[in-house]
Length: 470
Image (tube, rainbow, N blue to C red; front, side):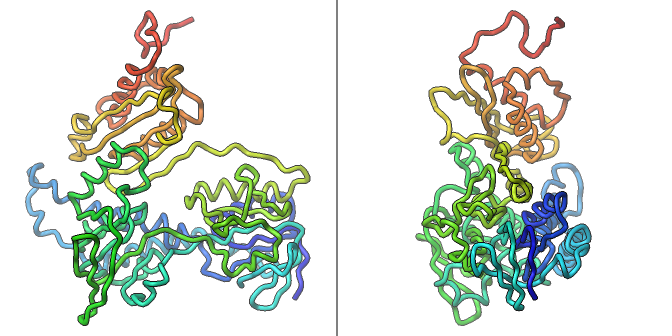
């Protein structure tokens, strides 16, 4: 079967679906191609099921504070792992069904091809089931897959990734988490709180991609109290005769039932025969593209989502998909401003980075304000007064530039700061905002006051948090 279309989208994940939303505004002559499991990475194996597991773990872990609150009987609470995993899967299926119901379930065979495709030439695609698609414009949105080092394939029976974790009906008694990025920290802490013996291993000295040394040290100190973090050494794996693995890292060693590999995800490009597309490729094998237009070096081909190898985050995929989809339908390509950076690790406390980070900033023109969560009243009441917030601003203007934190409700504080940076607000603008008492946002207020004291600016004649009437 041959198809002649205005646009072909390869990949029905988040980026592809957001692109489709734009395409459908302009034409009905399109095709969406995907030979994998539909329902998006986020809904099936990423954002959503992981947050269900995190919530279960946090609810169960809450019992650790019961004695100091006078609540008795914490030792009588039990966790049924099988039922917990069934709950994860039930909600996962709900999220997937909702995604499908609003997207691919509404497409007919003319518009949805459930098969993999590869380039024959820059305008032609061939699917595994023998269909040929000739497209005026093409959008590559094929997503990504977990990275498993080739020399570890021999341990495949012991390896867990996020693609397999949420299919488990039971959990192993012990796990080594290899690489402490977003997935490693979120899932590692959750498994530990569910009663699994967890060991975290990373060859670097930085966890979660944190670029602020003070926040990194605070995160290591806090999380290391929940499960051991072995940093600075590569993991070496040996299979034992009793169906377990012996893991060493430097002078440390442990015997585990499984390993959770969380060293990142690789763009799904290997099936595309990308060389036939005419797209220029980087030394890392990633298509060269403009992040403000999502246009590749071959002007009629666009790219979006995890496949870019840049930001494997749903809201970034959504932005890129919209840009790619819109521009694919335009005679004149338009550049769109990237949104302020926001990244959240949903461990407890949350680790959040917003806007520009210290390595990107001029130290001579940057002021930093900070607050420890230890004395924050609301955090103390909740029993989660561990952490540190650091906010960066231009020393001469007070304009907010970025932030890094490990904090309770960091997901919320991060959004407030992200919005403020997006709106080009200053420290003074935020300090004029109302702050209720007692709330976690008072920690943000305290960090802003500390930041204000370090600015190279003269005080006004009235208190800066007051706004006079003209």
